[in-house]
Image 1 (cartoon, protein in one colour):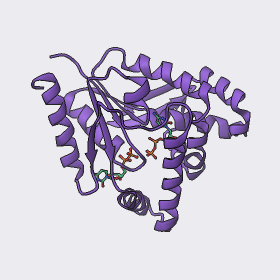
Image 2 (spheres, rainbow, N blue to C red):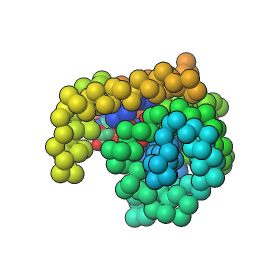
Image 3 (cartoon, helix red, strand yellow):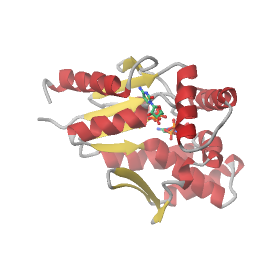
Image 4 (cartoon, rainbow, N blue to C red):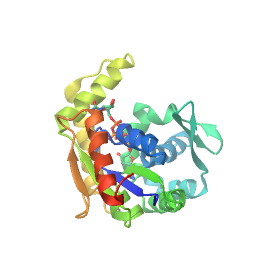
Length: 225
Ligand code: CDP
Ligand code: CDP
């Protein structure tokens, strides 16, 4: 059976990484979290006290960074220049800056090369914002995964609560909406639903149902998996 290339795009909290990881596991494919790569570059920039104003320096940093997505006990481990940054790339500081760092063209160009290399052999599920439109325009399956802003904020709120943090839901909603706006409106490779992508709205859908929906789309595409 031909190994498919599956692209999943959508806004924050739509369920992309959760669903993409399960789909990849069920199909025996590799999961590539491109958001983690942009977060890794942002983490590097923060560590060197660089901001979006230092676009050229951040671009050089991205081009020179060795970013590896590996797995330990079934969990994604992100290495930057050999350093484990799995935890640090999810801090509020990184989350607050990542959408701005992602607007820098040389950063995007560096990530594009890495991401296309990672997908070159097929048998991959890649999630992000510009996967169907820019990184893998010839992907066999393109899914635009979304959910209402209320539901996406509620999910993130619950996720934080489970980790022991109580945050203000309305504030969280504003932060997510602000990041979405930056991702939708940026000049280079904005978040977009391509014409050939299948829309999957998970607002009232369980994780299992979203996974089944995507597996069904893959099955239709490959004539049985
Ligand atoms: O928080 P969430 O898991 O939804 O986001 P993420 O997938 O970790 O991505 C973090 C940020 O990286 C996004 O808000 C975008 O600004 C950027 N990103 C991007 O520009 N292009 C991608 N292909 C993936 C992420
Ligand atoms: O990667 P993205 O930002 O699109 O979302 P995620 O990190 O995979 O999912 C955000 C949260 O929503 C996680 O805690 C998931 O378990 C949860 N989720 C859900 O409750 N129902 C879904 N249908 C999908 C995700």
